[in-house]
Image 1 (cartoon, one colour):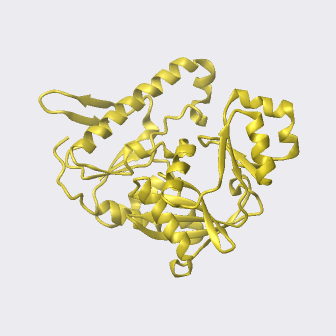
Image 2 (tube, rainbow, N blue to C red):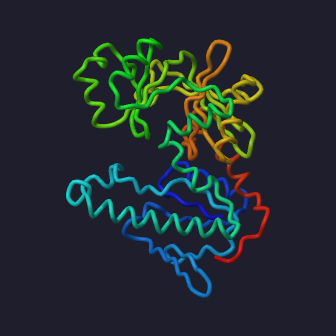
Image 3 (cartoon, helix red, strand yellow):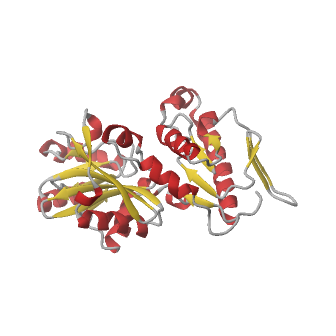
Length: 314
């Protein structure tokens, strides 16, 4: 079993522990070592060989891809980004290209990826993700992504309450106010597109889906629009008490995006639900700790199931 991500990440650490309790041998490609330590080798010759820090990928049947942690916006890169930004961006790009090539090579040999590499950027391409969810019949909020001030004014005039957020993540949602519709404020859209959505009133629910089944759900209790901006509580929702339409929407969203594991953000409305986003590599450790869910265990059970085909040596 190959685990790829920062060993300091609570999600990866929880999955590693859960797999060990199930007697599964694991190998960690530790993204905390990159760039710098942890030698990467992709040797293409008579037989392609892949190694990280001297550890070969032979015999791997499944990979849990948490993340590469190669985002220049991360705090650990702040000094390098200020001192030599172009060198840092090139460095991270080369690491990313090598690691992605390694994963595509493993996938071509029959190694199962959870989740597939091509799905990892779904959370950074939210307009496309929402279009796919909508096409699959998943209820989503009406959304406008634009740099056009007039489009924003028209959208707000028609729908009333609006929230806005970054297109690719990395920031928090906020309510659109009359001051935001000021000409000077809207002129800033020329610098970058922004995503605007109709405001949906209701309870924040996080639903976790593994292998086509809902394995956990929790209610997020907060007075803020974006619960990440303040202290909040999480309460486990027994699966028997989860509204069927929420379960159905979460499973459909996961399936239509080609995911084996997901965290679905849902607003439980009066008489229905609205899906805000599907996360292809969701954070779950805090939910397990605070709400008593066992997402790590459910994910470990899925990962420990051998792939249908035996992978070739890597």
